Length: 293
Image (tube, one colour):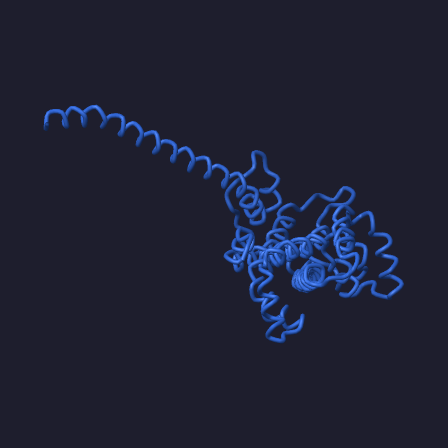
């Protein structure tokens, strides 16, 4: 009996060992691939930071230097004072927060009306909102500018933010989420005497926080990166945003490009969106991966 067991073990052990080695090599290859992907995605950010710490001669040297220079504080201080970076960051922060909060509020209320209110043409209204996804912003930017100009909102925060608040994408996502909420919740709220807004505030809003957080991150970055609309709607230095401020470093005529300062401004502009993503990372992933409640 013991002889047969030993013979079987002798035959199976090499196969088990080979399978383990194949799995180990497979995991090693996967990890190597992931590391290469992270390096490929992260290298442009690293190189932008490296350029932002160099002199203009080092930044334009050939072959390029990939190690940080010694002009970190010099470059960042010059950028901060030359284009009034503090004011630009404040304007961008106000626009990004107003646009993201406004989009979420308007989209939640419109999706709530479409899902929970029975009125004629409800589906038509939803599809009319959905079709606006196919209209790129440049198509309606002239007409929007005319409306804002007639209202006297040129060079104001209202003119910068209100035209960007409506969002068909967020309305669609909230509608799909509300459709997954059991009807028993609304029935129970009606039996308890809760009105529509009480149901929205006390039941729908608490179970929507993950979706709200995920959309907030996306909409904040959308508002932060706005360039064309702020460029058209503002004419004073005090109302410029950080993205248009970076354009001030773009060389004109025979002027040499100051890439070290451009990269320093770009790195400073990246910090607030990165802080939002890092702070809300858990909620962001939860909102994207939990389809139903």
